Amino acid sequence: MNRQPIFNVPGVIVAAVALLALIHGVRDYLITDQEDAWALATFAFVPGRFTLRYDPEGLAAALGQLSQTGAAMFFLGDGEPQWWTFVTYGFLHADWTHLGMNALWLVAFGTPLARRIGAFRFIIFSLVATVTGAAAHYLLHRYECLPVIGASAAVSGMTGACLRFVFQPHGPLGNSWTAPGEEAYRQPALTLRGVLSDSRALTFLLFWFGVNFVFGAMSQTLGLSQGPVAWEAHAGGFVAGLLMFPLFDPPHLRRAT
Image (cartoon, rainbow, N blue to C red; front, side, top):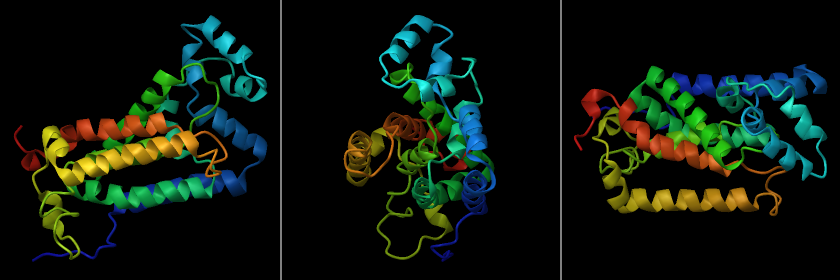
């Protein structure tokens, strides 16, 4: 039987982690604070930039309720929508801890997904999950003018996608206690109904949403984060990954619904 070392991480995952680390390293060590502020204003996702076009009065009222508007006005800038930030925010991180957590999650859930769908599909999938996460955050925070950053939406999407196949009997997290071989990533995927009726997949889904909500709502209170956690972006990425997985699954692995 063909077996692989458990830590044999696909090249696309290694490249993704290296790119994220390189970007943060440049921000942390090679540019000034002023240049880093410019990078955040240019590449982070700022919901208010997109709201200004259709509801300037509402945005002005929201800004007027803030005790300190300096940072918000800085990130609002000229108010022109920066459409590329629906993607680029996912390449920036608040600090090395933030990056490390996302990198670990990327290796854990990006690895089985990349092995199943291949590098090209994996890259497109990650970009779509990133965009969807930003869109979900925007729906609930359209008057905010502070930046959203991090790869959490993308890795949440990978997690949602993995629910479709990792808990299958012969899948990567199936009943085998040995390191999964290549065939583990070729098991027929669960349908959405199958995910909701599979006890292990459903338990993980509920656990993920519970932890994500609690962490997002209480991270600052518990001292786990210096700023608010965009848990809505995480949830948006996760749901997108769970639902859109069949669009990226190779045709010969798809299961008829």
